[in-house]
Length: 277
DNA sequence: CGGACAACCTGGTTGC
DNA sequence: TGCAACCAGGTTGTCC
Image (cartoon, rainbow, N blue to C red):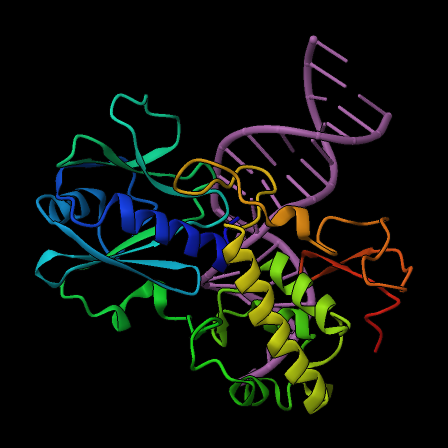
């Protein structure tokens, strides 16, 4: 479900609702969503810690805790990590409950269980399993057009697959890969190594712009993603190709009809008229 | 090595 | 109404 803009929205909301709170009583109900240790150990390690700054790398949340510990959180497809009002009943698929010093509760809920939690007791996130395959964050200053060109050079994979490969640029998923390619006017099936310098530059700018606009709109809600405040994002109203199979291309004067194809088992939406080559 | 694909999960929707 | 098939915002291991 959540890509960089949705995770960034969750991060910002948690920075308000969670930072400064102490985790007074922690329950972890399943071990299969916990990386690196079991559920009891995670609960024990978290209990009594105070939450500091909250960061993000790609689609991962980085929750800094007292005494140098760090909790990593990945929401997978259906995960939510949020502070619930006191007295709110626990929903099905709630895997972590932490009572906070202000009486509210921190909840991790993930029906599909494709998300993960991992504690780095020593704060060495570079050793974390969850970040092993995570490269440069798509919104960081390190992600330059130059670096992007180096990542793509000589590769035969379709550009859409490369955009979603977290080991290189981290944070782009299926929606924003489709949207960035459309804005740049590049076919999703184009082999990485065949893009011109101009196309790479256009795609780099399109990625930064679409992610920035989506963050400003607090993300895209297709089915069940909501912000930390529990409201849907607004970027779904501004999608140009994703989920628009059979509808008309929104680019001025284009007139193409959006098509859906399957690339490495994922749906790709694109305009065959303005995304040629 | 890179790239394609199945597998991991649940739940909602579609179609017979 | 029932049930099977298919789809979903992600990642990882395996195979070629």
